[in-house]
Image 1 (cartoon, rainbow, N blue to C red):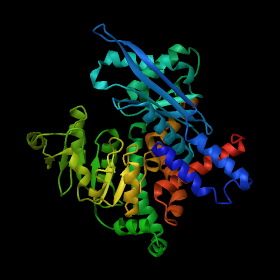
Image 2 (image 1 turned 180 degrees about the vertical axis):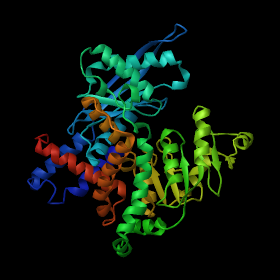
Image 3 (image 1 turned 60 degrees about the vertical axis):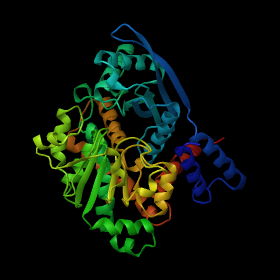
Image 4 (image 1 turned 135 degrees about the vertical axis):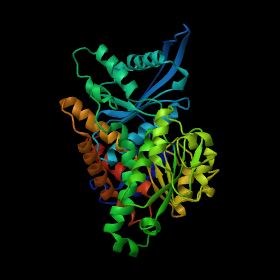
Length: 458
């Protein structure tokens, strides 16, 4: 059983004995409802897969595996990104689709959960070939996509350019129909929302800042008296100058790092960042704006040589990228791939606070091991929802053809995430469950109640 299915089943088990949960169900009917919910929430509604037939510029025809998996639409149209990466598998896409359903339920976004994937390395294709791949994806999955059916968005390896291409192809196939909100994460000129590109990174850092500053400050007396290992961790670091390492310096990681660098509420010092090539380290703190400027000029890559650092007046040491996770820092911000912390390295993790910017960067076994030690993990389902929240704003703006300013978007994003944090944090600090489990319990409870009300458990 995959990670999402396991934690869904554990969450259902944890709440079935609570008489306030589905109070109309008694005795045997509760057991039947539990079995129904496990079956429904751990399996997708639909699995769509195909081989995209693409003619390359050299005349060779290739068949590229592609997926669109729709997990659950009880809350609204399916919603989820399309990942372009060589690591894409059907199981991975299915697992992410479940996470999207739960994430939308947790943050009260009126979408269901879906996910897409194309097994390619985008760097292996020309712009013209990538354009054709995007068009083919829409053509092959045309019947299941649409602004009231399933609304894709960018993910790893795809971005606003790919969403623009896909929206344009959807418009070609469906002349005269609504098309602006058929895809989100588009460029501004094509109906995208201001702030969408930065939304996930800003939301990731905001979840950390709000927990460690706003929430701790407002509840200091209660937390100090709480017999809760995670409250002890939060109190230990709330007023301390924290050292932070950021794994992944792409769109998400660089934006979150810049938010940390500029933060006036917490005393952050980012001593290390890494990308696919290198780790840069400076115990006095890195110049994040300078690194962002360098990456913009070099296809997103960080400098890998001492001379490059010197020429751009950046004070840092070049180190092995894989050593970042085991640095002696207070906070790890994970913004790269899944399962970066796992059974083979979990005992070497020294950070006591971990922020999951990426999806599933901590394996199931490592998650339990670290949580049992009192390490505070802000999970992906809570931290990285900024993208789908602002995608929802973009979807609304596309329907109404009225667009919000960037500051307004961020204000609405933070209000939405603050509401979620204020909902789950009191329960988290009041019981022994890790924060991930609390978030899942809340999401599963909402989904279960709605499905029961709609008569979907019979």
